Length: 463
Image (cartoon, rainbow, N blue to C red):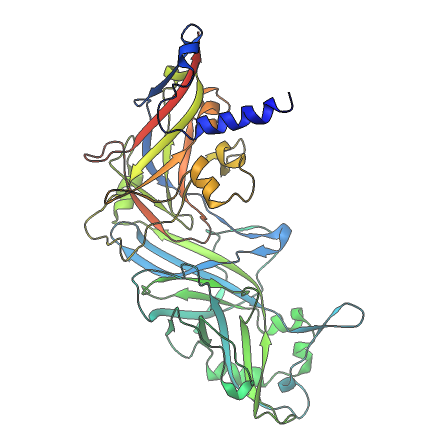
């Protein structure tokens, strides 16, 4: 029996991976049941709003590791505006008692030097860093507004939370910033012998802010809490369309150089200049989507099957797939269920400017009403390889001649829908990950004139 069970499991997985109707052993099953395939099982697909995405987990003190920033407007998906608030911390050092002790900067002590400039540096995530036309350099019109109070950290935060209270004066010297996928020095060689290089954005503060910081003394830097009474943080938001949406890492990666940099002369050492880096403590992302006058607005107002489907990340839009009549398979055992949809094109939307998403996943609403992975994804465990995902789940873009298509498997989950195990007979097609990935997909629905969406189910049924 110990040998039989693994062999049985392997046989089931092999059957699940087949793309043709299952006929193995059908000569034996003729008297006891049937194995078949159905391609006209009823299903409906339509565009709906995605849920607001979790951008800060209070129980783990965990903001998004990667966020999307900028503004994008097009006739299909409307206007997307991605902004975030950011809270600084003070640099610390580990003491002999294994406690963190705040480092009070030299410019705040007696006989202190003056600050020359203040710059916030934020690292760019190098994986699919820019969502937009490919360029050597991108321009992003922005403003940085001062927060009136520190952002609370005791509760979860979602991407549609209200904007924080902020003052109206721009803290930045310029009204736009530039970004490039190329690595650039973090600071000038005058500040260190070895200067790290990496893709990043630079937010240079006004001279008025520099003058304010020069008025502070060591008491203002005694603790994080005291410092944030002086500077609670800031809210970075786009003021117009960006050349691209950009993905940022406010806490950096293994080499963390993001932070608020105070550059100053250093008379106490042989160096001609130095800096004090205040790392980023926390950040809260806000994703705003306005579909007025867009194709998305029309589709969101529609119902029933739609010829064109939209899917987008950052809590924008998703596609609901509903199975209204399951009676044709009410007494069947589902061996394989595959949805397939081809990429669509619309006038005025250039796929070269807005690259299609690299992965589409299926979700369902649990009893609490939250979107979670379908059962087929859950049984693969927390970290399956790409090959395993593609074999047993799908979701990656594939080619059929010159046509791009996606396929998603939901064999186990469809069985649960047929057996009425879930609150609704619906699954949702979403961009993955939805909380930081701004990529999109235009797809052909079941009513498309050419290459319509398809649903194929292979099943077994006993007599």
